[in-house]
Length: 83
Image 1 (cartoon, rainbow, N blue to C red):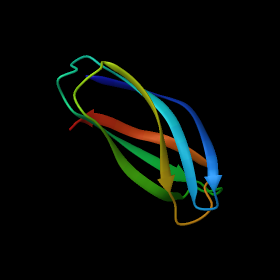
Image 2: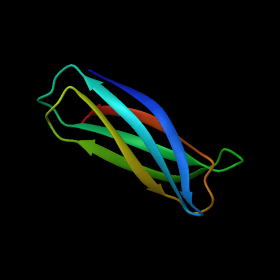
Image 3: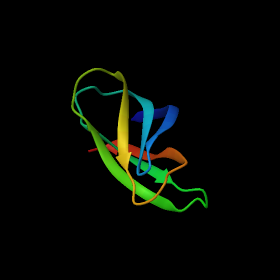
Image 4: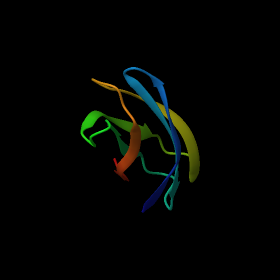
């Protein structure tokens, strides 16, 4: 029902990272929720948020910050689902 693609990420502070990603959904009438995760150097999860897309366009790209409890080094999309 939905496909997600991570385009890039950037460390924006000692306790923040931003991830730029997009979704492509078949049904634009449904809300989509994506779980974004931040990792530290040892691959421990140091931050996680749910990012929502309201019904609308089928293809959307956005940059979302993730607050972390320690210095992040990478970010990923855990999953995206109909919310």
